[in-house]
Figure 1 (cartoon, rainbow, N blue to C red):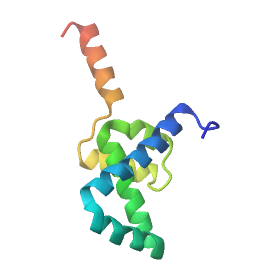
Figure 2 (figure 1 turned 60 degrees about the vertical axis):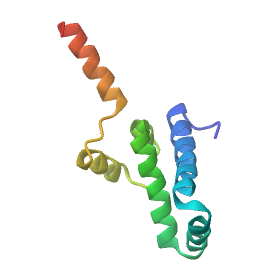
Figure 3 (figure 1 turned 120 degrees about the vertical axis):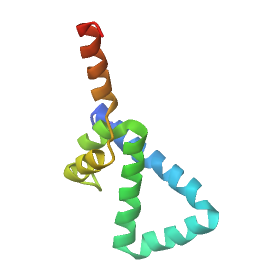
Figure 4 (figure 1 turned 90 degrees about the horizontal axis):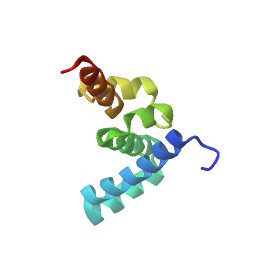
Length: 104
């Protein structure tokens, strides 16, 4: 982890924290069933990991996830953001700054 850039570290930790959200949403029984599917099926494992990436994006880590897209491709992340009107916090800061400098 220490060899990774700060953006990549944030993305990796955000992805792992997203698993806590997944487990919380599933509850104990469904988490056990999901974990059995995770270890027995590559397709289910990839789906579970991609869902964690989406949760991370939904929590504002989209620029970090683009920098460290491991399970989800950069193109998939950008497509998801476009489709769901996800605006990165960096874009909002830039917009606020440009509006401020224009006197809005």
